[in-house]
View (cartoon, one colour):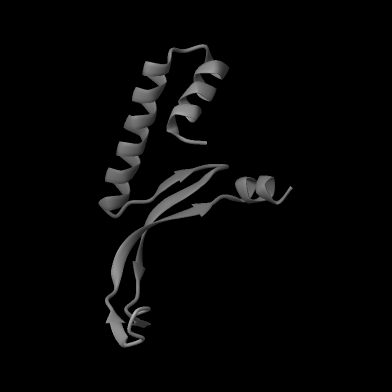
Length: 91
């Protein structure tokens, strides 16, 4: 499902117009991104949480040459699914 399909599905369920749903979805994503980038966690009960995580530096290998190289550590966004979401996916 892509964004347009998600907007259509929500509009069908809520009887709201697609432009309102798309604006709401865009603002939700923007708020989550800004909150996580500032170091805070966003928790949505029953769905999951978004947080900032540190990826440690490691040794990697260049697939073309086979030469080993250092891969620097970095900060990445991470999503941890909630228990209800995990249980639903397992079924």
